[in-house]
Image (cartoon, one colour):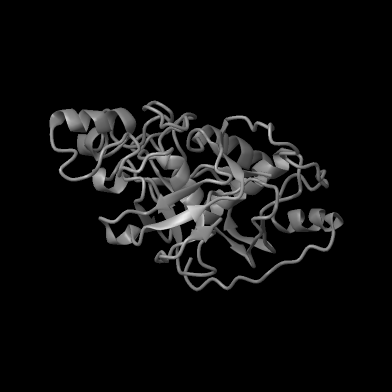
Length: 321
């Protein structure tokens, strides 16, 4: 993902969409309708929770860890929908197979968790973006957030989208911004963890670790088991306690791709932030089955890997306009 040159792509009319879809190796080249995905506020996409963020302000980041400083105020002017659980292998395979004729299933395996209800992993940021576009098209809309001229490589297997443009004003499915992700994760809490506990000395006791076990798939109940043993790797989604907004696995199981480039925060208050215009890597949030408690804080953030790994997946977002 280094040194990616982004060139804006202007589509003058919906009639050009079939040409673009053909160049992107899509099976369905028929023109989609331009019916909005969410024509009214009570629209409810299947498997998603509406986050009532409009007019709300929260403190993003934390003061204890350099990668989450400085704490800054973020205000939203809109509501949004977000997946209740991480995108599963079953969902990903079904939609990608139907949409991209050269899609190849990632190398999910029993060592790290394989099955329809396990979260996707071994997907890079572009593989996740293709899923978002496919979900928009499946919903009967051509209003995709991500446009590009062609796909380099194989969808689902570390592909790259040439001349990518992102238009967050579009009415399609997409990856959440960092601000959306953290607001949804915190669910109104201000502590390090959304179950209202702060890191260090927590988790210190066996009871503390058992509490983390109840909310997250993390090192203590997964990676520490050792490869080949029961519980090692990812776990089926939605098996732990949900947060205050009804979302599962916001901390743990797999890291989750965000839409933003990864860079340092700025201290000034922001409204509807979408991250920097450019950087070298995209951001991942939430911690995974390989990480200790420090990386499962609501504010924890890192730059994503160059290539697919066994502990990074994603969930999908949709603006409620």
